[in-house]
Image (tube, rainbow, N blue to C red; front, side, top):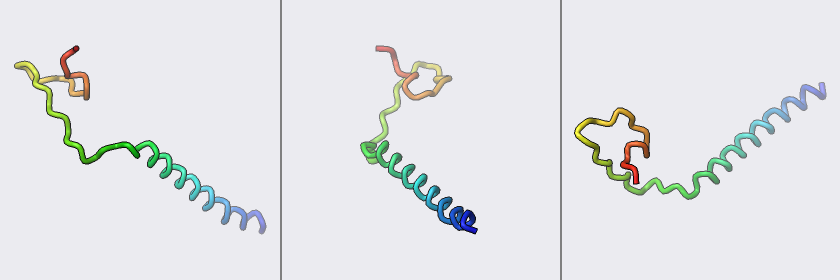
Length: 62
């Protein structure tokens, strides 16, 4: 009976701590993200459309 009570207590505590740590880690990773800035202007391509539209790869080499 004690093991069953421990499962009813430990499993929710473990889930809560896991989710709390996840939220804290996500907040720490995104604390400097600026979501209000304007998106960068599209880069002008040549006469043909770009076949690969991966961010950063369709810019001219510098």
